[in-house]
Length: 505
Image (cartoon, rainbow, N blue to C red; front, side):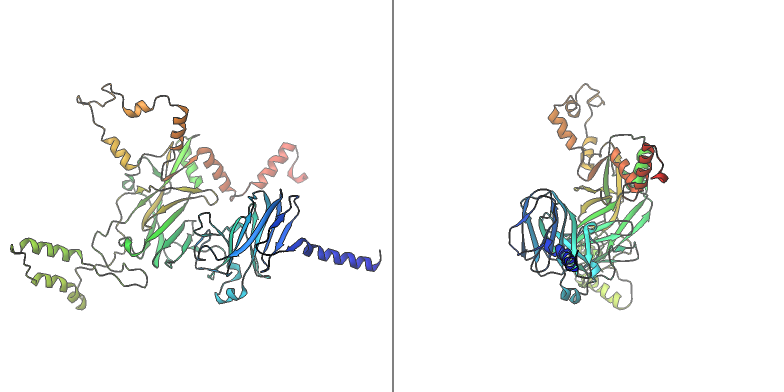
């Protein structure tokens, strides 16, 4: 082989990767081959889509105005998030769900990185959520190349959707975990923000006004706090205590929506099941809350959102004095004005003179909570990837615990109250003892197949997630191995089955 032939062969080897990439335009119909050869498309802004495909498909890509602002983010902690692209990328196929190794590579605007002071290590690809309300960040599918300022979402079987490059303006890189008690989380009042704490508790918050909150863990759950749980028992022996600057007593200051994502210790649940002798069946996992009592002391101080002045409201003691004056005033309804003047002026005078005010009490340093935990009646979802139970709440202030029961969730408090009010027969016996057949007993007769299916579907009540004992055992084993397959054990068991030792392999 001559030197010229060698040089030509080397040149072809260098050109093969570039020849595999096809330079294409936006809004152009592209063909995905179905013979498991790499499809690689480079667009005018240098963004790229690569994938293998098990069948022939078609693809079209466009640029468009982002569907939602960049600060509406789920799946990653910390804030704020900013867009690193002027336009988002919209990808559509003809229903391709059998792709292999699909990835979308987006170019980060270097100027936008510098202007927003974003560390390239804090860049992500956001995928528009199915309800088109937020950008989803899937951290295990993320890859960053600082050299060519690109960020990728990869390992995809389907690429349909809308995508955008996002940057997080934090000093920390990767996951940002908040410590309990000592650090306050600041909610900007715009966008959707998620904050994760050191044990995996994650709070997703959307508020209309700036606010802040802290989370602490309190030791012990007293039996007197559990009277409303209707057969549920706490999983852990501690409570999450959430305290915001609004203190839960002035909810009209900030309209919020929040989702509490509470980590589930499946090994502890497994131990509780074993202690009860449970070998099969289902358990119900729920979330209970001790909410804040509705402004029991007439407090109005320090209830403003961050950066706003406190609303001026009449204190409770002033209101009571005026009611008393109306009762003792003459029939003409006149009020002397002396007492009213004193009540309106006492607080101001005493405060200015250094005295103890009798009204406009500041928020207490510790929230006054309801005496018992109450199950949260909302749609609960179990996140098997992160071992968390997620449930929406209207107010984050208060205390939260995870609960469980064997064989199905208990009836909600209002349903049980109705059951307790079942009238007895005139001779002091229950209707069943008197020979009457209660409706519940009549309905428990042999059911038709459809009725049995409906009952089975209703077993998981609102506010609870149903998990089988087998599922708990499998998750507990997976958790022991760090959420990964037990590779070394599998090797050892396989070697034993083959009649060899690992040293000989």
